[in-house]
Amino acid sequence: MRKRLLATGAILAASALLLAGCSGSSGGSDSSSAAVNTSPDGKGQTLTLWDYEDDTSAMGIAWNAAIKEFETETGATVKFEAKSFEGIRSTASQVLNSDAAPDILEYNKGNATAGLLASQGLLTNLDPAVAAYGWDKKLAPSLQTTAKYDDKGVMGSGSYYGIPNYGEFVDVYYNKDMFAKYNIAVPTTFDEFQNALATFKANGITPLAESAAEYPLGQLFYQLALSNATRQWVTDYQTYTGTVDFHDADFTFAANTIKDWVDKGYISNSVTGMKAEDAGTAFEAGTNPIFYSGSWWYGRFVNEIKNFQWSSFLFPGSTMAPGSSGNLWVVPENSKNKDLAYKFIDITMSAPIQALIGNNGGIPVAANAADITDPKSKELIANFTTLTDRDGIAFYPDWPTPTFYDQLNAGLQELVNGSKSPADFLTEIGGEYQDGVDTITKG
Image (cartoon, rainbow, N blue to C red; front, side, top):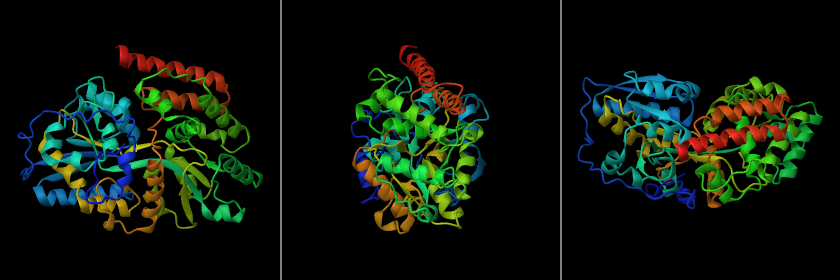
């Protein structure tokens, strides 16, 4: 969800369209910026920072550079602690409500994550810092959807509780050498995509690298549901504005297709015990020629895949795909160095750091277009621009409720291993979804 104007002709000009129909009100706060010191003296101070980016990813590269710049500018020392996505997600409420909270951390955006913590009073209201630093002028309007939360933790309106400095979306990574070996053209329709899967399987190859223990299979399930869904369908699902029927044509198609692809061997039934890392490294090893996952893998693949040519394409036959702003920098309410935390965020929004994101496979939100020179990065950003041009960003399947990520993964594991039929799977996750929404909206 991008926010406003990208710095001087920034590379993601198209992101202003991102979720134009879904963004909430600008919700600017009247909070004064006077209390924010934009030139903090950090001598003798330590900023504790957590993130879960790989050092070779676009964000990892850029943020390591930002740490060095921050230490030079402020005189402070950064105590960096690498965490896992799952580790932060599963313990955030407890840790941030204690003296062990870091000063700043990367956190997932959405109602179920940043929104939940904001509603619990665990995150600092960033309105004064936004006013002081002018971050709202660097973010495309729709991007601010994930940066703002109301008092119930629902995104799109209210105050700023996080700042993203990159965008992301989900597309299809493919092994160009294996496609060429079996004379498979890049599919442009859903039928052509299924034909590609069938060709690989006929040649003894399991085509899809997958994980049901973590997010990849959930994203594929959602993408299949999006194939014929409408923008209103997405809005109802994500923001509780209408009735969501988990036995409608879209969810039914998605569940039946996952089951069909497991039965045909396009997805291994062993993925029930696999994590996202397992799926990504299987693609890197050339074991599976197709991996449907996020743009956050792009920079890593650039650096780690040496034995074959690869590229990516948008999921064929669909105008929408999972995606959003990138993860957020959030400042815990218990942060001991808030002004230093704000300064670090500002450095990550600077032109040099944004260029590092863009030239290493990421999607910057405030870069100068002329600074992006890497051909692979331009290819990634072109796919993203195509998606945003057609208002195709649909958020993620687990966002509506705090528990739905685990519930969806557990349900998909049952679907893959055959312990639940598609209809029973949909009944189960539909009930869990509604229970979670009711807790938020009626609690």
